[in-house]
Length: 368
Image (cartoon, rainbow, N blue to C red; front, side, top):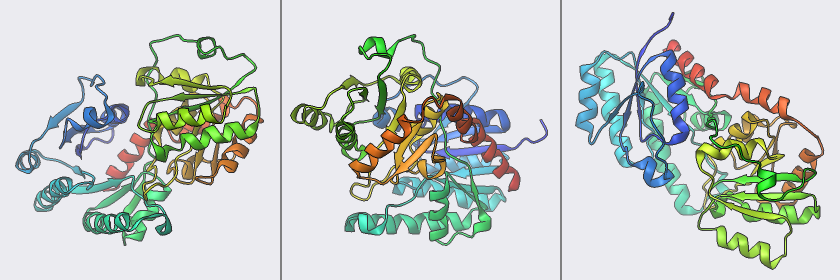
């Protein structure tokens, strides 16, 4: 291999959707992963995916352990953890100081961006302001910043990071190869002529599932079937809307296991992520958009979805105004009228693939 760097990648936890990225990055550099909160993945994401044996992982309990790891190895690059909490900020500070002392190059990576100020309640404005101070402190002191896309790049610029210090590695994920050979149409009695609109996410209010139901109802098209895949605190409210408004062809599929989601992406005609800013919280990226394109399925996302600001091309991926039923309905009509876009979607995914994400990180390491 022409380029090898010994990289210490500090992160909060290892959710299932990051495993393949770390595996790809591990092919390109000598990678060691340090997780500051190993239990976070199972407690928040409720995932317990198998971790490949070739990934070198260290779980730490405190900052003393982190400093020892940095001091006792000859690292070329250290990626600081995201400062989402005070503990994470403490970890980042300890790592930064240790690296400066040892002349180790440092990188700060984030997906963060913010909803427009008029959509942020006061408490969120205060929280964002305080976090911007923390992120700015570390971002300006590292050797390089990696943004997940154009929205997080703009965020770095807004807190005073020099443009020359910012590189973009488009965020990505991949759907695991499925263990099932399931015919979704047969399972839910959907005719071959029926168009499948897929919602696959946690059913919480800010994900906008209720708006998608209303958009499908507004279309008045008996040939359109909406699959709602997921569970969450907003699910009953969505079911009540379907029942009260007598919306046809809405099917509640329950939670889909990560190993099976590729089947649902591949057999749908369009995937929709209708998130909107709620309490000032946006969709930092939206990895399911990448995964839908990977399976050859076009995507509709809103202006509150970070991924769509980069993925949208007017064909395979449409961006519509957030919290707007009419815009969703028009987007659905538009993309369903285009016919089969499988090849175009898969080609679009290649630019935003998990392999390219790893390569972009590797290029950033080289530039250090």
